Image (cartoon, rainbow, N blue to C red; front, side, top):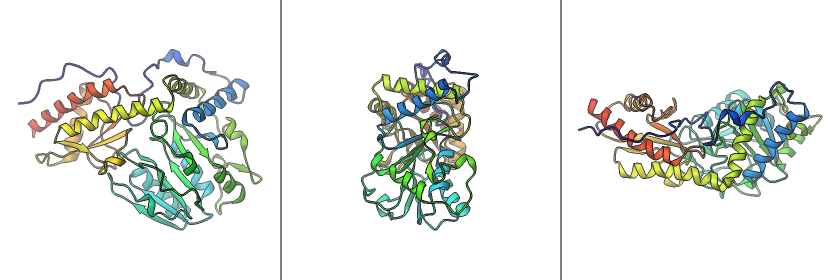
Amino acid sequence: MVMTKPATRPANPRFSSGPCAKPPVWNLDALRDAPLGRSHRASVGKAKLAEAIELTRDILGIPADYRIGIVPASDTGAFEMAMWSLLGERPAEMVAWESFGAGWVTDVVKQLKIEATTHVAAYGEIVDMAALNYDHDICFTWNGTTSGVRVPTGDVIPGDRAGLTLCDATSAAFAQALPWEKLDVTTFSWQKVMGGEAAHGMLVLSPRAVERLENYTPAWPLPKIFRLTKGGKLIEGIFRGETINTPSMLAVEDYLVALKWGRSIGGLDALIHRADANARAIWNFCAEHDWIDNLAVDKATRSNTSVCLKFTDDRITDGAVFAKAVAKRLEAEGVALDIGAYRDAPAGLRIWCGATVETSDIEAMLPWLAWAFETEIAAL
């Protein structure tokens, strides 16, 4: 017998993994101070961009001697910029355990044609980071957005490494503690944990990365949108808010609203706590139901933001069809939007648990997930 529909619905059913839910205090009126129709090079525009950089530094605890730049094309643009500008001086170690990491492998091996060793793990698993050669440049994702697997700690990254570490941290920043002393290049976007708007990326460079930029010239031509140096010196203006291309000042204002909210609730510790609470609610749900489980094999590597789930019931003969039916049913009820697994990932669900999501909404959604499962099983 199928259970009856739950009585309580999430106040906000948005559990998309990007763009993600807005901060709980967000409303359109919060953007009224955006300098629309003004040049981003005017004093008001430059001040807003500089404020976004410094609030990012403050909340994430980024060292004072690290440069932070706002760059085009979201996290993808930021990571592409880093690879094309910095790689090639020495061999690379390409690390992938989900689709975006696999994309960086393709860029380096097939486009840049750099001497590289590739390390790949299946969805739900992770590469042994201790086995890498850190005299080479390392490219990896901290949190696999499409696999729900994250690096548990940066302890295995040596402090005396000769190579650079390039870290795609787009679904980790603001929800997981990043060891900045172990990361030479870090990229992320506004649209993930802070619920900002798309199309803008953040590029964080250590002094070692800046040194590489100023002393190494890649063998390939760089388009203007990737150029971080001029005359062998870092273009410092990029890291003061003088962006390479025209940013959306509306999106900048939206990011500032999110950053100020994050600071107001207690900063990074509070943001991590919120994401942890959201993910823990789902992990507990999985522990109580034998038909669903975390895609991450090792508990230590489970993501607290992009929580990926798989159905384990033996009655399910086509996992992809079943998972899509469950997600569609939940969307039709208006209780969970955009929670299907990523197109390249194993069949299942992906529920965003970043800091802008309320734990009460996760808790209200989970009984609906049980109802949808039982309804679809009964229909088999």
